[in-house]
Image (cartoon, rainbow, N blue to C red):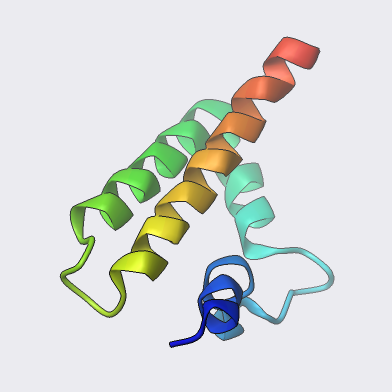
Amino acid sequence: MSQVRLKDMVNHPPHYAETDNGVECIDAIRAALGREQFIGFLRGQVIKYQWRLGKKDSAVEDNRKAIWYANKLDEVLSNELEA
């Protein structure tokens, strides 16, 4: 599996390539859950991808997904500091 494919599967997986009326799935989840629940969702995703590291397809891909969700969590928490 090439590094380019791994990056695409993390940042732009084909099953999320389409948006509904210009809305990304992660943004719809955030809007539906509200701040506190969205933070919990992101933390859960980090745990999930770290937990299954090396047990499914690609350990590198799972690690990168965990990092992607951790970065999204950092973005949400950092926005509070800037406000």
